[in-house]
Amino acid sequence: MTTETHSQRAEHSPLRRILSSVFAILQTRLELVGIELAEEKDRLLGVLFLGLAAMMLATMALIALTALIAIAFWDTYRWQALAGITAVYAIAGLACALKARSGLRNAPMVFEATIAEFEKDRDAFRSRD
Image (cartoon, rainbow, N blue to C red; front, side):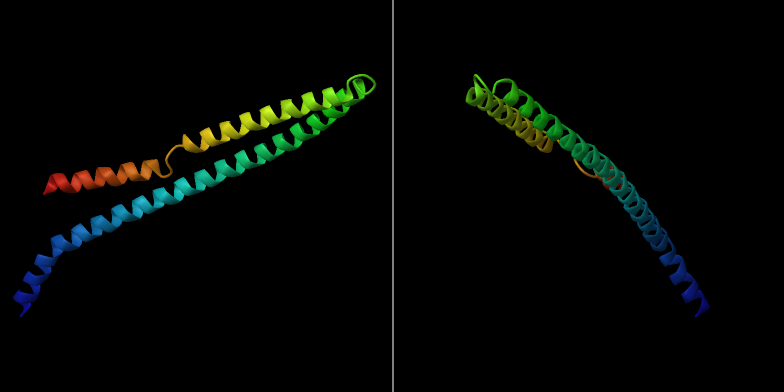
């Protein structure tokens, strides 16, 4: 019986090594996914904070500019000045919306490095067969 048990262990040894390698590869890839998620979260939080600060400051500047122009033209061209400011704001808003849409469409693929590593692993396993 000891020879049968010993031979069964010997037969399972390569299978166990393969499974161990597969689990090690999966663990490495999952760690890579975690690192990429953390990096993406940090990047998004930074962009979000700067974007909100920029919007707040730009809004304050636009309010001050609007008041300045309205006061400057109040006696002569009040409605024309306000209409011009409104047109400028509308065009700027449209340009920002188009730029944002373009940024979303052209965003880099999430988990690009992880997917590349999975493709390398798949190619490595195919070449062994």
